[in-house]
Length: 314
Image (cartoon, rainbow, N blue to C red; front, top):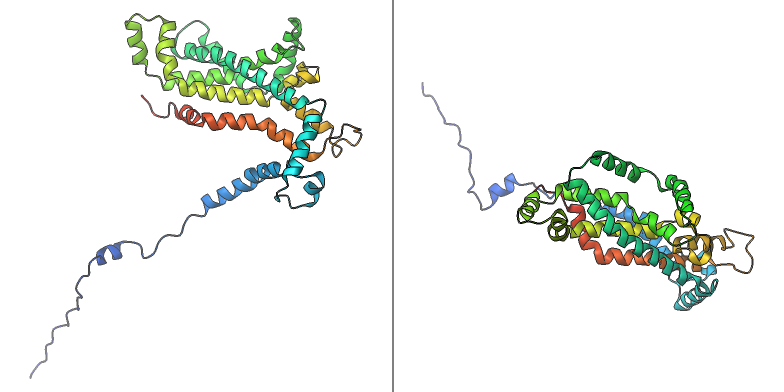
């Protein structure tokens, strides 16, 4: 009996084309982009950039335009000039006196802070002495305490030495900056090679010489970081000068803004002839924040270096 034995048909193979393996192993289509970064940027714009933009535009409007026009619509140079003239006419150009006072208090306190905080941080990090641990703990405790809790003790101390009402009643409390001491301590502990210090000591340098010739030149990033944070804290401090300085011509600009706010009719209906319009208050606020912005723009490279110091172990 004849049998019909047939082999199964072999599968057909098509010749491989260049890149077919890569196409088979790779994804068939691009992955969709993650929307989270875009959402974060949008939230940042809404909560931070838009209020600042509104503040800038508010200084270029009249009070009527500020209330009835689109919040983000631009004003005019004429309104900006009128607001500037109204601001400088307030109490005989006192806004410039407030800005001068803020600059004087902040920069004098900054110089003293750098002369005290950087050596103190170096001493806590590099030397051993009795009471070192207790001093470090006290620095941390004071750093974590709210500033308002220190106002009454500072007032009593300054009153005992008869400094109330003088500029030193503000400058001296500004000058001793526990956070700056802690930043310097962290930097010298983690980012400064001890071998360089030991080599300088072997060459005959005293401890002061080691600090001045080796440690301090290498500590430029943390000096800039401490200086920036100290300047911002001094410039924006409100409560301490408000308590310690009795005269208007002694106020820094932050306390002066509070005085302007009290003379805005919408916030104080009992105000009389010294009424301040809201665009004028917005312009004064811009003047108050401009120095901090300028200092940040010119020191941001050092700030980044200071914040990244110690991120890698030597």
